[in-house]
Each structure stands twice: as structure tokens, then as C-alpha cells.
Image (cartoon, rainbow, N blue to C red; front, side, top):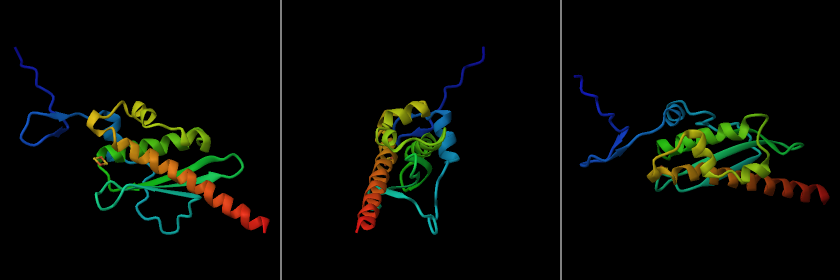
Length: 158
Ligand code: FES
């Protein structure tokens, strides 16, 4: 009888038998990240969000374009020094906020890492925090959009 081969983890922890597997959706978004922006020269975003720190490597930048009439996100770009899980989850987040005519800013600030994980088919538990990076940078970008807008309104009122 043929012996069934044990599926090897995608990632092995050094010197142990421990490891973890990623879903096919996570691997797809990691190997083919959507909406990544490696060079932002000339990209004029309506809102920019930044979380984390380059010093420890977990930095995430998110740029959004917003339709001022509908207050929906028309474009979402990002860049990170984070790991595979951060790349996959932010890639998925960028799809979620721009699909179906774009997410409203109101809904975007309420987007939770759990919503992103559901679309990815999950992440290993120890990688959950990586999905928070993109979501927090998105929230920061929305706040930045509102702050820019209120400064413009103040300028117009003078
Ligand atoms: Fe730091 Fe994933 S972003 S471990």
C-alpha cells in the first residue's frame, strides 16, 4: 500500500517540527500583490497613512484617492517592509476598499483585520498582528484625508 505523504508546512520554525501553512489565497496575494506602489514619485494621493517603524521593519504606507462627491475610495496603493502575511493582507485590503465602486470612508474606518482575514481564508494565529498594519495605515490615510480637507475648507473661508 502506498504511504500517504505528510504535507510539509510552508514555513518551518528552526530546530523544531513546528511550522505553519498559508492558504492558497494568502500565497496568491503574497506572490502577486495587488495595488503595490514601489515608487510613489508623481502619485498624488488624497490621503496618506503611515504606521510602524522602518527601524524594526514593520512599516506600512497606504495612499488613497477619494471621490470628493461620494467620499468613496477610488484607488488604494501601499508599500511595506513587513512580512509575507503583511503583504498578503494589505494586498487583500486594497482590493476590498476599491472593489464595487469603492468603499465609503465611513466603512473604511470600521474595516477590521477579521474582515480581511475572512477574505484570505485565515492566517496562522501568530501572524494575526501583521494584518493589523494595513488596516491601521488605511485608517491613518482616511484621517489624513479629512485633515487635509478641513485645512482646505479653512483656507477657502478666509
Ligand atoms: Fe512583522 Fe509580519 S509584519 S511579522
